[in-house]
Image: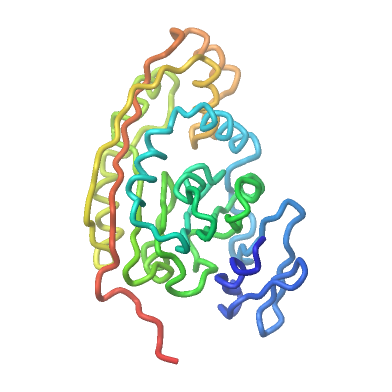
Amino acid sequence: MDPDLVALLRCPVCSDALALTDRTARCPRGHAYDLAKQGYLNLLPSASTGIEGDSAAMVGARTVFLGGRHYAPIRDALILAAVDLQPDDVVVEVGAGTAYYLAGVLGQAPGRRALALDVSRYAARRAAKVDPRIGSVVCDAWKELPLLDHTAQLMLNVFAPRNAAEMARVLAPDGTLLVVTPNPQHLAELVGVLGLVTVDEEKERRLQESFAGVFTRTGSEVIEDVMRLDRAAVEQLVLMTPSARHVNYRELLGQIALLPEPSIVTLSVTLSTWRRTSTTHQPPAS
């Protein structure tokens, strides 16, 4: 991992800044974190030990599915929304998974850097190999994020947990937060047939409530597309989502075998743009 990226991180124990020496990140108080051999840094606080992130199978399925460009309209919309990003800006994605969207937003600017945050070490392994400009960090999005104040000029959150207060602390005062959430019609053709987890119809209201007083929405657009998925793609799609934890695999294969090929499936999400509310956390004066 690039030492300059590690310098943007803070210790999950004492919140002091980290610095990379050889393959160990240390804070001035002596807390130390070794880089994994796969290139990521585990900054998961002890209170979060044992929490469940995406499994190796889920991450593998996501890699295959996203590699088929079925969700490319989402990635393309994020790239377009980040058009004002400067060549040396820092991008942070909370719940980055395999860093598919993050890598797209980074684009071709060699000075642009990014941090991919995820609770899954399997996802972190993938993200660490995507692009040398991306630093991959294991952490808990519901706890304090292991980043210094005002680190990111742009923050991404795609189908992922949202800790509004911490995201606002990490985002620069003039920074932008891009959030992607599924709409009720997303994957509607598969939900009932395969017993998938449904989209909460109150998701939009809950998003607004969770950001109230912290972020202000400045824009929103619906992204919709028609996906034509063969049975293998449908299988990977199910296995990469939370539904994978609730379905019987043998029964799933039997249900997928009855689907037409290709299956016509709706992609429907909302991309919303947010800025920090003026009263958001300010760090204490030094």
